[in-house]
Length: 184
Length: 184
DNA sequence: ACAAGTTGTAATTCACTGATAACTAAATAA
DNA sequence: TTATTTAGTTATCAGTGAATTACAACTTGT
Image (tube, rainbow over all chains, first blue to last red; front, side, top):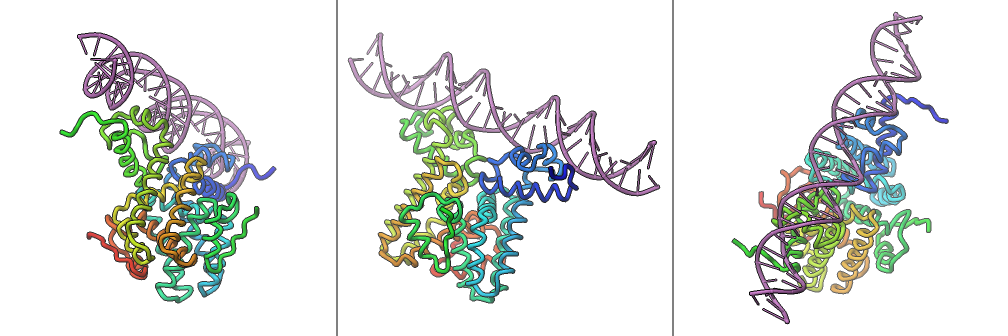
């Protein structure tokens, strides 16, 4: 058996991971704090104790996902093609991009919206800074990223993809530099 | 005062409009059937009576939004630039694209996911068919559409936009053919 | 050993929400 | 007019879920 008692910091980390798993699949409102508690083998009130509110836990999930994405880009290289390959890896993890998508969807909540806007802007600026590419190329890169994010959420690209429909094969095949490593 | 009693078909239409307003802002789970009922000046149980379940009302909203988008493209012309201009108009309406985004976010629900995948594929194929453009150009067009959808949801593009941050001005400015008609 | 802090739970509350049931009233048909 | 369908309501329920409180058990410094 693993350790029974963890420090609050360790447990919080673990809960943020569980939160990303749950929120990325079901979204902010449909995910219960009890779902997340169960994923971490902890009682529901303890989740609230550590994070105060469900909203703050969601925000923590957004921030970790955004940081992981930034780190993936930083590790990838300094040209857009390398960052594009990094996107493939992000899509393979599936949860991070989906978590951000849930952030976009929940951004009418002011507290969530402010964080999501901030992190989105930071990622954009990071790509600009890392690659030094023209604004239009960065925009195109980001647009492709949004398309892949949506296709991932629809489960037509990336792992766990639904049986391929013709339109999807064509669309995904037309994304330059993207290799869909589905495990069907 | 307007008519008091409408036919079921008229009332259902009106409810789907109200549903799109509410769902597009708050998402599937966070929107209550009572919110929608109030928007249409109708009792909450009547909403359930007309649509059976909340889920079916959401699906009806997705289908209308998708149909409206298809119609907008059909009316726009036969080249990608014209369809791009149509996107500006869609973004100005704000609710339709946001409704679809909420569909992407809620697509882990099997019943919703199936409909959203189907309509997404139909829109892609419609663009191909209308323009006869290369797959890669259509993909790029769609990717730009997803970026605009997200920026609209974040309220940094389109009407009701939050005060412009520098990164956003640069990003939006780099989208070819897109003119952000914000009313600030 | 023991006090104090830290990690965690069980029990409970209270507001909310989708759905059902039973009923009313307006329109339409016979 | 009367019968029937159609449009709509009020009342209510059963379930849920975030948050609070009070308590228990483990760890650590002294």
